[in-house]
View 1 (cartoon, one colour):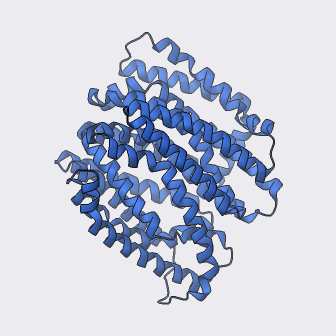
View 2 (cartoon, helix red, strand yellow; view 1 turned 30 degrees about the horizontal axis):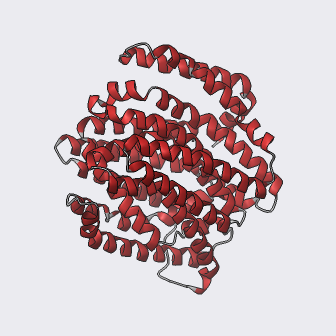
View 3 (tube, one colour; view 1 turned 135 degrees about the horizontal axis):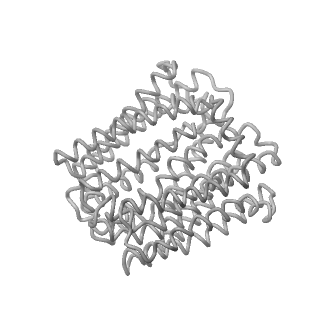
Length: 461
């Protein structure tokens, strides 16, 4: 499973690089706005029944079938709302090009419910190897077709079609992998408790989404589309490791913690180990993205994307923080603290939104800087809140980050020498390789036991 995530991450970066070569900053700005609009509507119109299937250990076929049909009803509602609201969104962002993009994107809500329950059943059974295979195949097929569409001149629509095809191929794979077929029944009484849990989770997810995307909403409104395109691409580059590794890891963590939620000592141990593993995997990618942003973008994406380099460097630091914060999204609800998760995400949303607006008035780089400063403060606040419920010491937490911190500082040494050089493609690859070797050797020396354990578990699954 771990190898699959690295392959998906590399594949995602490669597809993004090719599409960035073929498309313009304005195209990426448009797809950034489309994603924000669609996801915003979804959060208010879907309940999120999947987590309830995972959290409740003993579900029967009637309950799962009921959730399947409710999911589809809300999916159809989302399609209608996004399709009908496309004109309103275009007027809000002063961009009529959004209308056809949003209308095509709305079809995702007819595709996703086809396999959402099937996907959650795979997660509940901890069949993550199969999920990884499905994700990988879907990413390859959708990426190839999106590149072909960009080549023949579809522009921003190729990015929309990429998302639609990704969800379609994922749905096909999940339905083929799970034998479940829903009954034609809707029993609201049987899922009453699950609906309550889902509503609590949706509230927390709503605030979490707003906190993570309020910058996109505000900057999409404040900045010209082509300038916003730089920010949209930067978020794709920086948050790809977070999506591919951290988010997938939290999908594993939620069902695992739910099974031991009454044993806080085990939950605490699992959380601190998760912090170590997440930072061990995500940090080197984000740190190298931050250090080498300018030469990487210039060499692989093209000169037209160089204005995004400084934003990538700033957001990379923010990404390290966010990768750790993301763990609380799984841990708090899993120990029946969804309300605390909601409150925590509300605070993050308010402060992040304020920072995005205050910085966005002055420009792109100023907005990214303001967001980073605020997220550092929010990280400290979240640390204090989670510490209260998991009862770990500050020393225990920083101990879990110690080896990664040392390895990260040492891997930065090649970058120091590269500052005075004009780096070409071969030199860039050499510096990347050297940084990676330094990091790997230090981590292997300090965390050999942990790495061997992870390798054996990955091999066994």
